[in-house]
Amino acid sequence: MNKPRILSGVQPTGNLHLGNYLGAIRSWVEQQQHYDNFFCVVDLHAITVPHNPQTLAQDTLTIAALYLACGIDLQYSTIFVQSHVSAHSELAWLLNCVTPLNWLERMIQFKEKAIKQGENVSVGLLDYPVLMAADILLYDADKVPVGEDQKQHLELTRDIVIRINDKFGREDAPVLKLPEPLIRKEGARVMSLADGTKKMSKSDESELSRINLLDPPEVIQKKIKKCKTDPQRGLWFDDPDRPECHNLLTLYTLLSNQTKEAVAKECAEMGWGQFKPLLTETAIAALEPIQAKYGEILADRGELDRIIQAGNAKASHTAHQTLTRVREALGFLPDPHQPQ
Ligand code: AMP
Ligand code: TRP
Image (cartoon, rainbow, N blue to C red; front, side):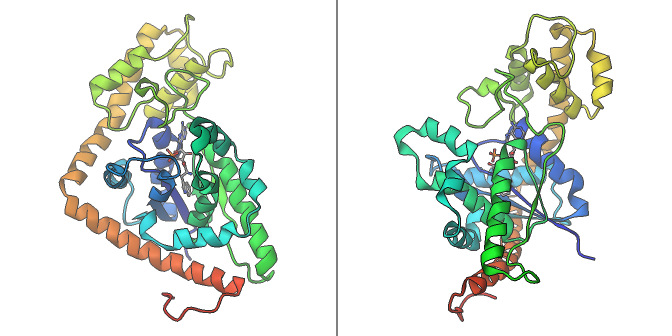
C-alpha cells in the first residue's frame, strides 16, 4: 500500500531558529518513515517581501543543508527547490483565478506583514497563501506539518480545493486532494526570548530574540543569559502571567526530550540562576550534532547539488502530472509539449 504523502517547506530567509526546528522540522524528521515526504525550500515565498539577491542562492542551499543536518533521510524524503519546479508558479496562477480576493485580505499574516511594509506591500505578499496552496496541492499531499502560525493558510488551501472540486470536478473524480494540517501540541508556537507574548521569528530585528540552529555555544549562552524572565522564584508551566517562564520551560522540555510532568517536577523549586545554565547546556548539546552534520554536508557541495537536482527531477514529475490534471479540468487546449 502507498504511504500517505506529506509536503512542507521553509523560506530561505537567513538562518533557521528553534521555532522552525521545534514547530516544524523536528516533526518532519520524527515521522518521516511513515510517509512519502516532499520538503521544499520555498524561495518564491522569500521574495514576497524585499529580499537580498546577493544572499538568496546561498540561503537556499543553507536551508537544504539544514534539512539534511536535522535528519531528513533521502530514503523516505525528497528535498527540492520550489523555483526549480515551474509547476508551482503555474498552478498558483490557475488557483488565483478561482480564489476570491477577500479570502486573501482576511489573512492574519498578510495583515501583520503588510503593516510592516507600509506603502511597499507587493501583490506577491497578498498572494503568498495561494502559492502555498499550489505547493501543497501539486503533490496531492495528505498532511502538512507546520507551526501554528500556518493554520489559517491551510484552511484557505482547503477552501480553494473545495471550490475547485465543486466547480470543475465530479463527485467521483475530484480535481484536487483535500489536505489536513499536522500541528503538534508542544512547540507549535515557540515564543521570542525577548518577549514571551510574541512568536520567535526570523524577521524580528533583535538577534537576541531567537536562537538559531547554527549559533555557536557562546552565542547561545549569551542569548539565554540575556533573555527576559520575571522576578518570581519557582518555575511552572501554563501561567498566563508568566509567558516567558512557560516558553523557557517548554524549550527545555523539548530540547531535553523529557515529559512536561518530569520538567514541572524538576524545576518546581528552581530560580532563574539555576535554570538558565541548565537550559543553556541542554540547548548547546541538542544543537551540537546538527551543527557538526551541517559542516560535513557543506564540505561536499557537489553532493548537495546532486541531492537537490535529483529532488527537483522527482518533484517535477509528480507536480506536472497534477498540473496537467488541473489544466484539463479547467478546459485548456492540451499542450503537446507539456511533460505528462
Ligand atoms: P518560516 O520561517 O516562516 O518559513 O516557517 C517555517 C516553518 O516553521 C513553518 O512550518 C512555521 O509554522 C514554523 N514556525 C515558524 N516560526 C515558528 C515558531 N515561533 N514556533 C513554531 N513554529 C514556527
Ligand atoms: N508559509 C510557510 C511559512 O512561512 C512556508 C511554506 C510555503 C509552506 N509553502 C508551504 C509550508 C507549503 C507548508 C506547505 O512558514
